[in-house]
Length: 422
Image 1 (cartoon, rainbow, N blue to C red):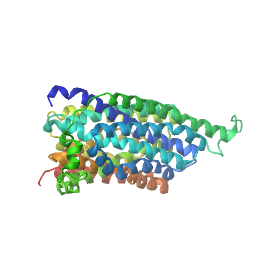
Image 2: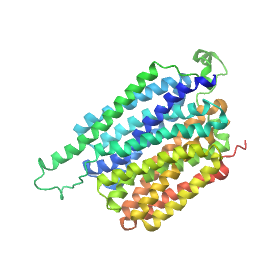
Image 3: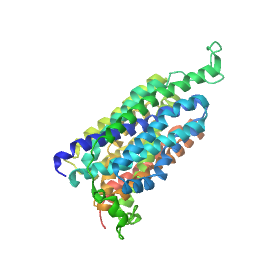
Image 4: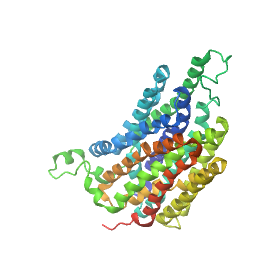
């Protein structure tokens, strides 16, 4: 393709980064809300993250097979529609008011988003010069940061009312009593997901009528793939022979787990341990995501002068130090440290992703599938953090040793793990 044909495909793909950021960054708000509507403790509510991110472990390989058989475009459209269906299911779930129903919905939405992420990340890396792929992916991920900011600063306020009653603390004169309170809090979740579903459907329609260039092995027709006796494997496990990809998968597992451990418990930390009311906590959450967004933009600019791997190493070391601050002081000092952690986490995912895909050629889709699977770190490490926080409430800040350890693996990848030595 000629360079000027990159603009429209990249703009469309950038929209996908925005959409899945809204979806995933509503989870911390939903954890706080489900603690109220389903009467859960911190550890129980953290399984909201497990239900969502488990899809990213189960489906990347089948999704890569689907896209190899059909196309990136087909996978994107299917993922958009599936996630939209999940968002609309909040309406019947509001009638059931059962925790398992919400977990199923999050799993469905995440499956749709997994289609988008499996397609979009490698698409951005190949639409342009290979040497600028990390910078291009960081630019794309800045739209992810924008979606995260909107979810945290605005949509969270549509969901969280500012009231957090239990059966014992509910005012005796509350109109309708406990059931009315639960219904009101349950209904508050529907509007945000209706907005998300309509946005997903609108973008799906745009993709249906848009032309996306074929890349890599998509340039071979599906008929030729079927008739060729030496046709390429739908998923190539041999890609794991590349050490920089293996270490990339490991680094992504720990990065995702560490990031989500901090993100998912942020509102719980604000309200329970820093003593902030919900409306103030959501404002801090918006600032937290704004720091992430600014980090993406600034980091993308700095990559013009500095090597991505060097920035990754420095940012990871800063986060190790900041996690130490949270562990030592906790409270409001820990909260401000988390704002800084968000800034330094900003470039880590896209930088590790692009470095891990470097030089994979026709194995790019398979490599991308394994990197997306590494997001399963979100399904277990935040729960470990929540367990420590719930089991040891008087020393809750010790739980942040989990993300600290995660950033150690990221630092190693920026130091040595990224090197292509195959």
